[in-house]
Length: 115
Figure 1 (cartoon, helix red, strand yellow):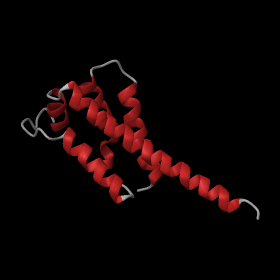
Figure 2 (figure 1 turned 90 degrees about the vertical axis):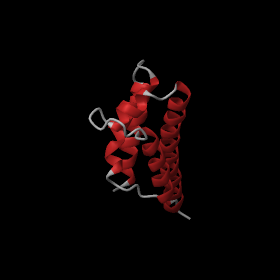
Figure 3 (figure 1 turned 45 degrees about the horizontal axis):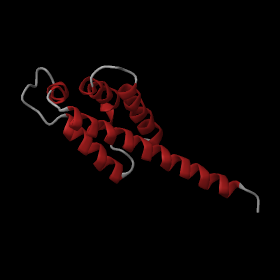
Figure 4 (figure 1 turned 30 degrees about the horizontal axis):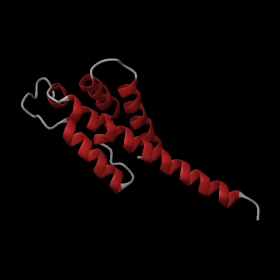
């Protein structure tokens, strides 16, 4: 998988967190739906993968109702504080991924400058 794909999915997740006035628990469900395909694909950077795995584990922790779905079941029971913490982790992961791209582009620009 490419970092472009990772940026697209995490960016969509951040948009889902910001694009609604719904309770944060519901916005986390929307964010997970936007980025859930990253579960089946490995992120290109092992550290980012570990961060994503931790987010996914927190969003699917309650396995008590497989019919309703782990994310729905988990998110419906999250306190506002815990939900905000998970949302912040998604935003931070997305920001770091984008910053790494910016730094890579800056390096590329430097390499292309005539000497």
